[in-house]
Length: 231
Image (cartoon, rainbow, N blue to C red; front, side, top):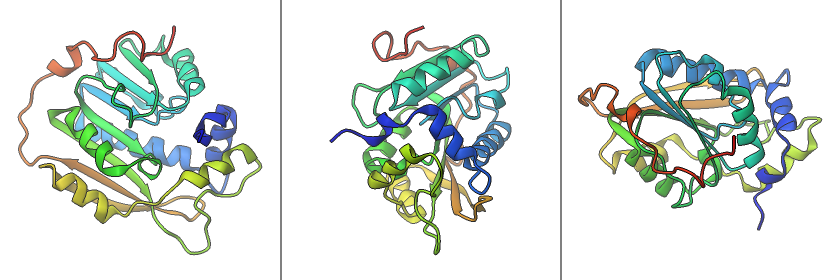
């Protein structure tokens, strides 16, 4: 079965996410910016990067940025928008669940509204394996809400089919999955979007991880060549 995300035009997705009453694009960008400010990472990875939402919030001190998205057209647009603005930009088009989709460790991994579309446990294990020893993983989950559809109705009808493959994930289940792999939940907070939908932001890491400087940011990616978007 073809993943419906492959049939969503980026303009429709961005239009939907930015609609008054939804405004989830700004929400995700703000959460990402908060994580960047709090942890001051040398390297970051954004899973489900779409067209690079939030990339404009990345400070110059971040020496390496990895973006992964299932839709190759989304990745191509991120390339066009940010190649000249981010010096060390690694873009990967493909399903994060695929064993071929890999990158060398980063200090911060951001998964905003991604885990609802994947098999959670193997993806969590994979993400944690690609964190540096001092790294953090920040996730955003959509919570159940009475009176709201999982995918909000909008004029952008090509977005609607993604609801067929969306499955809400409980924050407790995610926490359990992470903690069985030796990490802990450092923070959890609830936010409500302009459209009235609730979301849970969770931060995972270790209590006293050593600082490795920026060594990981200087490592060559494991996924050179075929996994990167064409320039």
